[in-house]
Length: 238
Image (cartoon, rainbow, N blue to C red; front, side):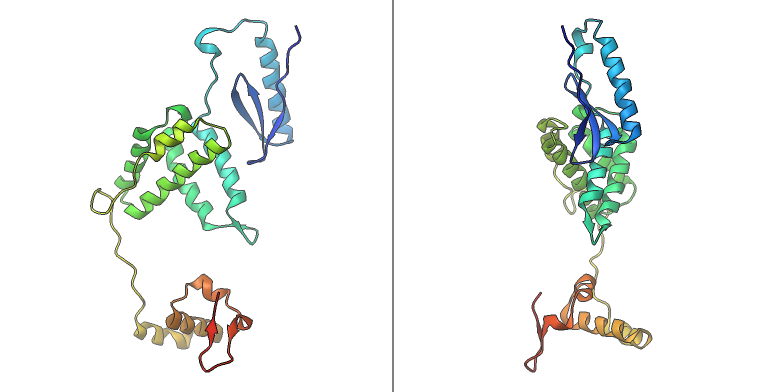
């Protein structure tokens, strides 16, 4: 009887090579790289060698994806998705920080065994570090989005994502997480004292922000051609 050789495949979402044997996906590194081809040859050699020995019982079941493997795949995807003007955005940095904690605590665990209890342990470690409630919730949200992405890519069963997403976010006054004070406006006396020390263009940008409440990114993309100056009052509609 002929043996069907598992294919050397491209995982488009991450640019990684994968080979699937008995329902278990193994990721081999960047697609079409020498390393991925070498690992593929080794895996196929082991596969063909194992074909001569009947496999039954628990050892025949598929080995689930480990958390650290999922983290690697998702971060490769995130670096290509969260990009602006050809450069990674700050979201990539935030994702890296959230996933680093997850990998430290549960990297070697199978994704199929990561549930609400493990998720809460990761969250508790952030709280114990003294991080704010908003930061903790944002970090856990990023971890949850990774599991959702993995379901869409058919890397894990949907039950894993549903279990993780069942854990609600921290509510104000209902946890030991630190609450941060709201950020208020800079006082006029500080702005007036600072303006003489700024370049003319930067000083004008600060004045516009003070009058309109624009965010820094919004005032940076403002162009003269975007402003209607026909009347006494100038108008800008983003």
